Length: 529
Image (cartoon, rainbow, N blue to C red):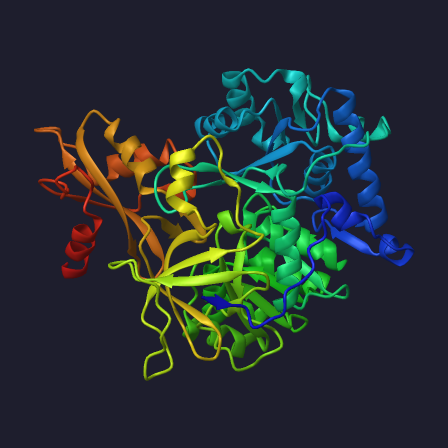
């Protein structure tokens, strides 16, 4: 059993709203919480808390209460913080939805989560309206933040100045958010994260991540993703830092915002690290205010991290987690310079971790002669571990064992210096630019095509060493289907990050006696090609 080298931290028994806003001092209230580069508008912490309260009051006046599920389909704009925390203030549950989702994907999540309200912005209204109609959400329950005829908008709701009701719930058991994750395999499932889960993970992160109230954080990673939700939004608000919001990533805009707003702290996914290390345009901007870059969501190789650090003269850090862990379990500690950036750092406080041999099921505890353990699947137990998957007891029991350990599906090693490295994974998920893609979801879609008899999807590396989805297709006899046709079909039905980017036609999909796709055989075929 491995434990964090950091001492345990106290986890307040309060909801997220009280944790973030309950202790605002006069100085805190006057500090800048949010900056909108599109308009230059700044929101103070005091104004944000007032907006959160007013939005919660407006929802309560319309019947939203503890336990109501509200869908939130919104890019990174300042209003996200208002509505997200307004919903939590009431004890309602937020299911955050990927802004790139199609109407069909939105509808599936709303239906599965049991959402009776949906909040969005006008550019996403067409797909939001279509999805809402399918699940029976009426026009008056579809809030369009920046306004659209026939729907409530944020300005109207805030202007009503309703006082939110006092609510009571158990932070340890009450579900605050329902992000959707594919877990270690399968289609996306609602991850039940409690107020205590979210509060605990912010407290844990504060031990290893030295974000301060003097920092300006460029918030480009989406708030709807658990990484952006906890490590950008909630951690920054708890530390009274300033968030500079970006609705989508564009390298020139990214660099411009750093230069204009003098950003100091960046949270990124690996593709941005590649750009910082290699893209020539970086030299055209003054980003010297940046002192720390923290990468997560997918593995970042040490060479790229070190190249980026050298080029922009900033400290590079890396962490590890998953939605089911709220999400961070490991992060490089800022107090130590002996932990290599190729690792994911140390366990955060208040957690225990096992490494388990994937073949024998035996726990790995011994260091080898090189000071490193043999590889094993990472199991984690702590206050940040989810309650389970919504309405999926079987999937929950496959991931959470009777002792409370979450089986991550990732394979790592422990170093005698107290830190971990990720070396492989046993799960089937594809990680494309930090987004999770479930092969089973794409396979189900491909099998609906009349010219496809069978299909399997795995992750392969492209020329930039980034993982992308590749489909192996068994075509119907004399169908004449092409790889372009297959890729276009998938692209028309899924969010852009889920698109199949390579296709290979084969005679048969390798399967076990029980009918399970043998992805290792397909990976071996790919390696031999």
